[in-house]
Image (cartoon, rainbow, N blue to C red):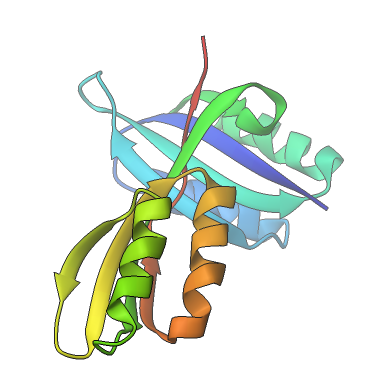
Length: 158
């Protein structure tokens, strides 16, 4: 099964999110990531859904999405050249002896130290999904205490 990044432009109305998520769950697909945000157009939002699935069934889901009343446009960003980003906050155990190492790792990934305490450091990294994954893997030896990720966002390149 391949990963699909689907952008859904919707009219910002009650129940739209539930109907969209319902189409994926009805097909037995778990949504890996979901981000919803306003757009430059008032009362229009964009939903970015990351899901793994069979290409044929994802195509059927896209067709059914297009039939929903509040859907304006559905685009599979997996099939086009796009910019994709994700934000991660990671809190790691960081003794005074390990702080310099964690700081260097953050510098390499152009991450930002957003909080520091006697025992922990919280780091924010923004980037392409693969880069974010690499950063998390390199943080694991420092014992990740807490980790939170935004949903992926995607925009087609010109």
